[in-house]
Length: 142
Image (cartoon, rainbow, N blue to C red; front, side):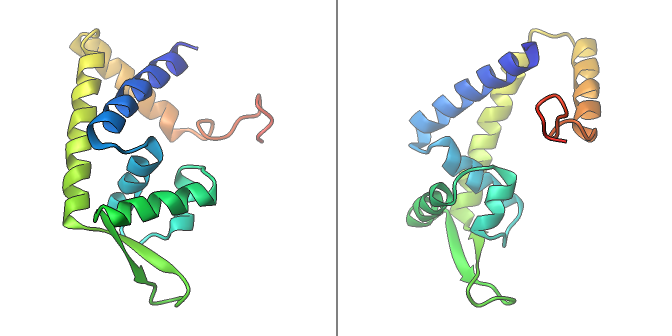
């Protein structure tokens, strides 16, 4: 439960900051993150990265588009599909958000000395590389 507590507490602090500072819910900034990281993906692809209802994603994409942070282009492969591309303003804004999130993580990890940090991050990479991070027999998802 300690890992869940650390992750949830960090997310709560980060999300609250971004909501206040940028007037942007977590759904929106996580979608912006996906679009900047994977330019050209479709709205339905965001559902695979961040499981959310399609109507939530549609509203978020519309919000990001209204704010000039992303633009939609018609896909070359499918005229019905629209690819999402970040604008320069969207990339800049995400850069600010990521910098603040990294600052927050540095603050959170200040409780660890350098050796403890290296061990912790090594263990996190090992867990993240494994198959059990997103699938669970214990939770009936085998």
